[in-house]
Every structure is written in structure tokens, then in C-alpha cells.
Length: 115
Image 1 (tube, rainbow, N blue to C red):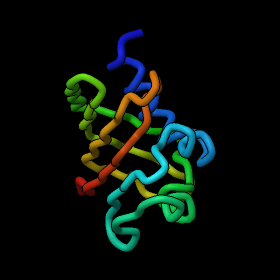
Image 2 (cartoon, helix red, strand yellow):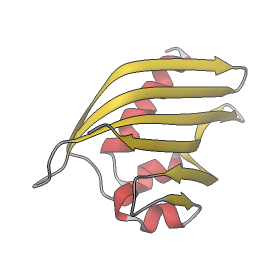
Image 3 (cartoon, one colour):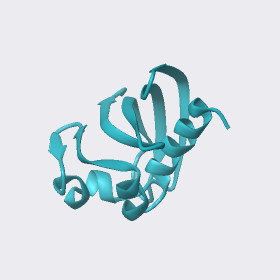
Image 4 (cartoon, rainbow, N blue to C red):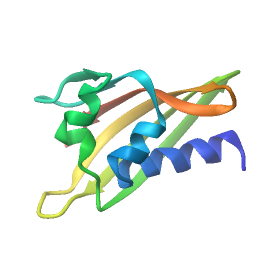
């Protein structure tokens, strides 16, 4: 499996797996930027915030863009996500990954609502 395929698979799991799985794929001091009111989160605050801890029932990623250089990779995409009893969430997203000791870890993630 190529690095690109691996990272897209990890990104999808980030949205749909539990917080424990997402935490294992995320660098210790990663920075996430979410729409208000969550805002900018780092470290343990990531896992206390409902926007991160609550998983999505299903997601669809489109308009995928991948860029990499050495041990750094960036994914950018449009997501459509569904949670129980909530409207469909549409956002433009990006995630930055670093390959550390052969494993990819998310360093940052950002979401901008698309609707």
C-alpha cells in the first residue's frame, strides 16, 4: 500500500473510529482547529472536546488532494459527515502528518464549514 493510500485510510478512521484509535494516530502535541465554539485545541484538550471525541456514523471524502515531501504529508479534502439525530456536516479539511520512526502521526487537523 502506498503512503498516500495509507494516509487516506488513516484519515477516514480518524472520523469513524473511537477516540482511542484517533489518539493513537495523533502526535502528542498535535494542534486541531475546529469551528466555533471548539476553536483551537492542543494536547489532552483534544480528547475532552465533544467535536473530537464523538465519532461520525458515516463520512464521505471528496475533492481529495495529496502532497508530500520526505517525511511530511498533507491531505486536503471536502467531507460530508453524518451523526445520529444531527444535520449532515459539510466541511473543507486538511491534515498534516509526520512519519516518525516509520509510523505516520497526525500533527495538525483543520476544519472549515462548507455550508
